Amino acid sequence: TAALRAAEIEAQMEVPPVNLVDRTNLMQLAYILQNARLVLGGDTGPVHLAAGLGTRTIMLMGPTDANRNGPYGQTENAIEVERPCRYCWKRACIKNEDCLERITVEMVEKKIMEMP
Image 1 (tube, rainbow, N blue to C red):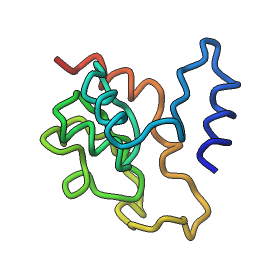
Image 2 (cartoon, rainbow, N blue to C red; image 1 turned 180 degrees about the vertical axis):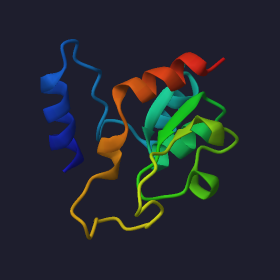
Image 3 (cartoon, rainbow, N blue to C red; image 1 turned 135 degrees about the vertical axis):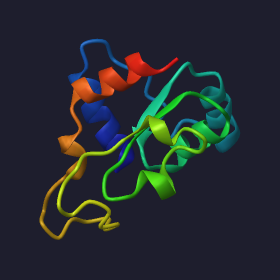
């Protein structure tokens, strides 16, 4: 579940993040995202909500296309990695790969530094 995955990530962090998984309703989430300095995440509802609210957003693209699913009004802030099966749109990879793993920390850091 999302809560278990969040707990796994939290346990690995040197400075634990504030874990809000399953602890907010939609209005509370919108308030948090609207007041964030930056939102970073995958092609998910909360990240789309952040972009729609005008918050600076970086979206990590897996099997989807940033031109169609990238952050609203900020498609230049999508990070995509070239690969032969790019834009397959599959939720589960038939090649048993995780295309998001190809996005490096350095790529994300670079994108953050390029943002106004």
